[in-house]
Each structure stands twice: as structure tokens, then as C-alpha cells.
Length: 225
Image 1: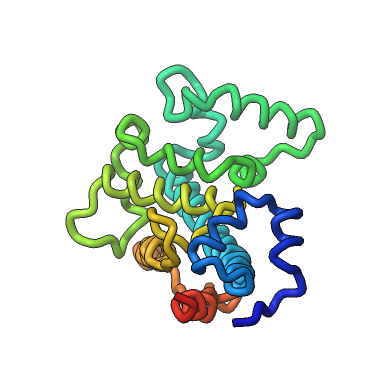
Image 2 (image 1 turned 90 degrees about the vertical axis):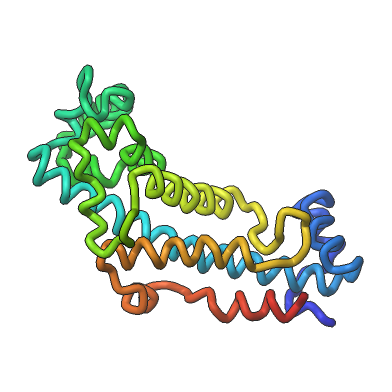
């Protein structure tokens, strides 16, 4: 099987490290050409899924923001960064971000919404923050499955965030826990993302017109096994 890349396995070892490439070589039975093909597929999958997760993150944070604008009021991020407030534990981060915008005379609530990490939004679903926020945050998921709880949502959103971080840190996503070629890990998290987009009344088919779709690359990985 010939690799469709212009990089040899030897060059990949030099550029990306022997330890990184060894995972692909071992999974491909010692075939360097097959290993390079798999590496290429993993790169394309990572590119595609970074787009998927990025859209999910934007939809999620905007849904949270719109909800808390209604229930906690205007400028809720700054106002909740107080002792016993929803964002008490994030107060230093909120204050420093606001001060930086104030210094440049460009502060706005919308800028604040766009300034925080996926982790910031994920932690709003912790038991503590869900309670302080009024136990209403699951309302952003009008199509959620019956029996969906705060604990379930926090676990699922955390899993999606960890999937996103794995991609962002350039870790492989095409293996199972034993190092064998597998798309199960990807498919599990892809299903989670699609489910939660549906819960938020977002049309995945419409959103996919904005990004590189991963389905073809998933099929290619499945065929290489």
C-alpha cells in the first residue's frame, strides 16, 4: 500500500519524533507506507473535527449566554464574578479580562463572551454552578432526552472538551486504548456532539455546510484496518 503523502516515514520520524510515529507503525504491522497513510488520515480527521467541535463550542456558549442574559440580567459575567456568585472561582480571570478591554476602551459583554475557554463554559454545568445559576441551565437543551440530568450533561460536555483538547494538542484520535486502528473513539464523541446540537435545536446538516465533513476520512481509516 502506497502512501499518498510526499513525506517519507524516515522524514516523519525526524520531523514529528520516532516515538510519535512508532504508534502508527506498530498499528500498521510494521509497514511504513501504511503508517504514513494512516498518519495522513489522522491529520485530516483532526482538521475536520476541530471544525466540528469549534462550531459546537460557539453554539453552546451562545446558548448559555442567551439563557443567563434572561435569567441573571445584562452583563451577567462581570456581575457574577463576586463572592458567592456564579463566577466566584473565575473572578480573577473575569476581572483581568475586563480590565484589559477597559484599558483599550473596547469593553463589551459580547467581547467577554468570546474571551473564555471551553473549560469556562463546561464548568457552568458543575453541581455547584448549576445550583447557583438557578438550576435552569438545562433549558438551553429543549430537545434533550427524557431523564437528562445536570450530572449527565457535565460528564458529556467534559468528554467533548477533552476530545477537543486531544485534537488541539496534536494527539492521535484513530486508535483504541490498546493502540489498534479504530474509529470507535471518534464515532462516540461525534455522536455526542450531534446529540447535543440536536438538544439545542441546531441543524447539524446545515452546520456541516460550513466545515470539512469527516465522514469520508472515517471511512478511509476503517478501510485501512
